[in-house]
Image (tube, rainbow over all chains, first blue to last red; front, side, top):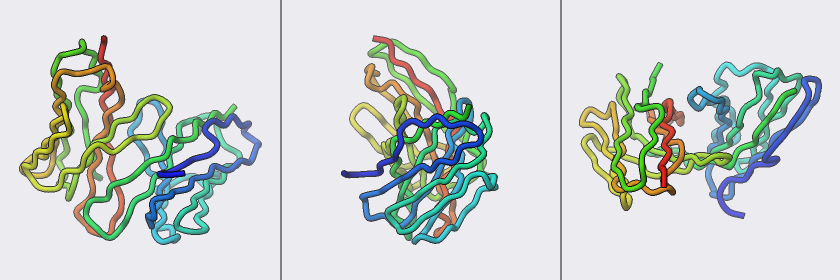
Length: 114
Length: 113
């Protein structure tokens, strides 16, 4: 496996369910990100992890709970979501410490909340 | 708050035509990136520009960073159906160590065969 992988690719869940999204990067990067992409809105940064430490929480509701056990893996735990949370959730990684901030994205998880 | 406005929002042109997409802000960025995203996939990095006035070419794509590092443009020559996708610009702040990118509003490009 190369690059950034995300599972599952598609997820349908009810508002009372609990599910988790998984992201894995094989690039040796030390920063990982969760983004939300909705129709007609710019890409929204949710969380940033740098060397496994959370460095950014962009006012995300507590029904989204991130977890970063190591620099290669990132999870997004979901519970009691709302229909407006339906979106494409993208994971990205980058190498920190320089000015370029090039981020590499996974294919995303298409989430539908019913 | 840094904002990046892209124009046009939608663009549909015939194969073989040329086009330019713009990315504008009132903020200064240390670097700016362009991504292309195809349906059902994540954005793929095309290029990073760092120096004001910098021009980079990637085959038929020409990227320019504004002299003041507040804006950028993407010019495509002789567009092909494979160029279809959502084009996103993203700017990095001037505080090194702040690993955030500000993404633009996007331009959805359709090339008609």
